[in-house]
Image 1 (cartoon, helix red, strand yellow):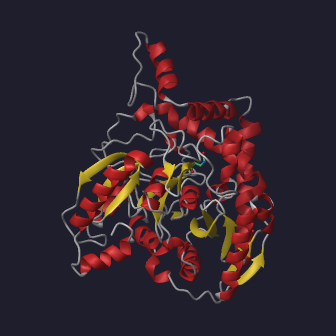
Image 2 (cartoon, rainbow, N blue to C red):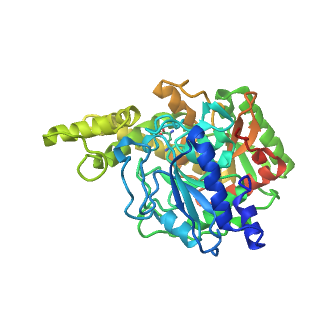
Image 3 (cartoon, protein in one colour):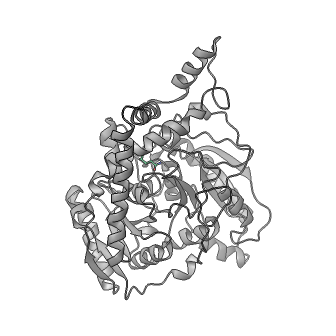
Length: 469
Ligand code: GLN
């Protein structure tokens, strides 16, 4: 039962073969059994929605621990917020509640969503269910590992530079980052506000569409959410790709493992077979994406995280003087990666360096966006690898710069505000999943989902679920 998708379970509930309550009970039981080892959840929420109406019929969803559910803890994987209780609901939570979702727990993540491996969480890493010596990816590693292992049917994550797509790829599930402005960020703890988006992590593309139908749309509480109509994404799922043009950026394949390059070649063949036209495209500035992102994301983080000062909320150090309290709260409350980024961000925003780093990075961001604008004049979608490698070993990547390279192919979509999805597309020789990334133009999630669905129907990678002993 817990290996089924949302849409399969909805059908069973409609036929009265099973109730949401039974599913919820079974899910909690499995989590209690398996989570102590996998560490996908930080906390559990044990209150099932009784009302079995709404499009989700009471089915349980897991939520990344940087999205607020009123009355429950939101820790962001940080000592700074380890006792913080949310005082309001994020808009996505309100929307899910209206669709009769239940919430089952808050999932583990890199501290304040900064990382690519879930190892910077103050609650310890989430293991990869395919091989427990490997990382689950990050920062939404808890959500991806939970969905991959049967500890959740579906989950929400957040993606600033790849945090939905990279763990989805490492764990063999589907992860979608929507267009910037498509899903409200109200109630998501801010990391880098001009890049952050909430999105679904699911077992298949149909479930991603189903959740996108629920969480998308304008929200007056988020001034960057966009007031344009949301199509019914389930209606865009067809296998016929005639007339669809797919762009391939060949230079991307030079910097990935042979297996990943091969999986992309295979995807191109699948798309040709489905009737799509394949076109070569050029994205001359995306090679600068990592440098650009780590200046902009750190700059925004240094500003956003200034609120965690021991006065307003969260952890407070035990000091007599206010000066010591400010300093020690932050040095004790934040982990090393968060401190590194706050310092880097403060540096690039300082008066002597603002123009040299921050302003130049903004300009470069615009050039990257223009590369995509040009490409989308010729194609409807672009395919890229999600990651340069399969899931690495826990503890193996110790240099920050090496870790940052893991986001080489995911960051461009955030800088350009584009929607992008990662879907399973193969298994590596280490017996670990590989991900195919598809990007489309802004607010064209319907095309993205269609192109992803058509691929998925040709393969059964998405049906593979690791069995936890
Ligand atoms: N791994 C990237 C980082 O460390 C992206 C994180 C994210 O998308 N939240 O910043």
